[in-house]
Amino acid sequence: MKKFFFILLILFLAGSYFIRIYKIDGTSMNYGLIEGDMVLTYRQFDDIHRGDMLVMKHPLDSQGRLYIKRCAALPGDMFFQKERSFYLQIEGNSAKTKQLALSHDLQAVSTQYGYFIKDPYLKYYGVVHNWKLQVPKELTELPLTTVSPDHYLMLGDFRDNSADSRFFGAVPRKWIFSKVIYVFKKPRNWMTLINIEEAEKE
Image (cartoon, rainbow, N blue to C red; front, side):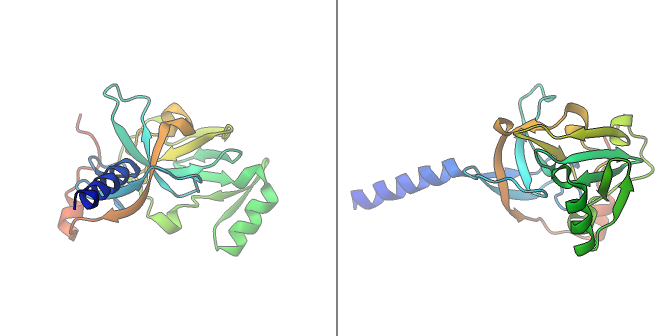
């Protein structure tokens, strides 16, 4: 019997190391994640993909809290932002980007730097904007940038109220602690969503 409980204890400790549960606090991932939702995350993961939700260290948070953002670009990807729209070129490869857009019914835009996909995550993840919000320039315009090796561009789904890589740049891999593998959503109704505060009060 003691051996059985010892095995259970080992399994519990191992599980508590590899698995983490976090409660959502804030609006930066509206409306896929809203305040009060819970996420199950896994620490021992090797690959990061575009679109993954990840738990990361936030360099501008003096309290050292962890944040959940979505990976919007991988090392080698090129991106820019114009009039709040996000443009992505896969691996810095214009031809590959155009082909991906055509094969998945995404909008490919021709620029002097080749083809970019306009707002690639809007179709799949419910990225939202509130056009009535007055937002800083970082949330509307970004210059053409290539993501550095071993770095990841992290954005909030509520693009007009998220302190993310648009302010502090792509984050190094060592700042990313776990990957969201399951979401426990609290019950939603229309009025609940309407009444969410979409921006910090002045």
